[in-house]
Amino acid sequence: MGAGHAHRLYRQGNSPVHTLPPHTKLAAAFAFVVVVVSTPRQAMWAFALYAVLLAAVATVARVPAGFLLKRLLIEIPFVAFAVLMPFVAQGERVDVLGMSLSVGGLWGAWNVLAKGTLGVAASVLLASTTELRELLLGLQRLKLPPLLVQIASFMIRYGDVITDEMRRMRIARESRGFEARGVRHWGVLAKSAGALFIRSYERGERVHLAMVSRGYAGSMPVIDEVSASRAQWSSALALPCAALVVCLLGWML
Image 1 (cartoon, rainbow, N blue to C red):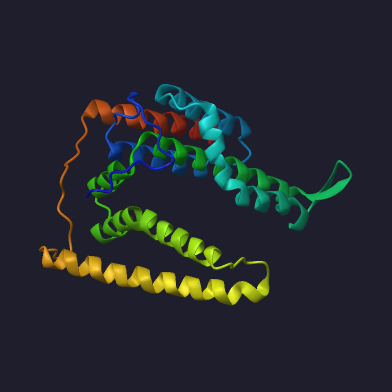
Image 2 (cartoon, rainbow, N blue to C red; image 1 turned 60 degrees about the horizontal axis):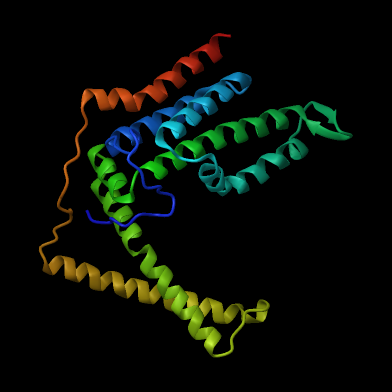
């Protein structure tokens, strides 16, 4: 399992969070997201406390706020969807700044924004403190189906290769004077996409044949066996456990 190059979300460091085994961080992040999603949307104070917990983890991991906020921009499509909900939802309405908004839509928008943002932030923190190769080892340690782990591994390994192929094809088109300016150029772009698919498929066939010739029988060898001590599990699960306490209080109050 050798997809070892660092990805753009990863931030090099040796903090206590960085050194935790990957499968403990994966389990902690998943449990935290489940707890956040299970929290009643009316408990606004609970979501504020979740944000404080994530900020504490980011501080321990030495991940700057700017680094984290910049990568949270990936959720902009969800924000746009949430902003539209109060305008299109049905039911009781209320006037806000001269606009008639749906009460249910406002609650729905808050629910999407709060839980979505916290989930994305937890994922970004996980990616910021764990290399891709370690994430794959962690998924394998958590007994994710081997086929899915292999697919993810090849996707990571050859994603840059396919991207570089796209870049070379774009340069070749531009060197011949091509510039996409409208619908009439979509045919050329479609042909380029088809050529890229064929090249990627043929590369996959060659890689598979090369693997089979080297003894591949449907499963990849495990080079590194990761394990975690009880103390490491306790450290990793401190976040979801604290969040669970907040969630229970949110349901009780």
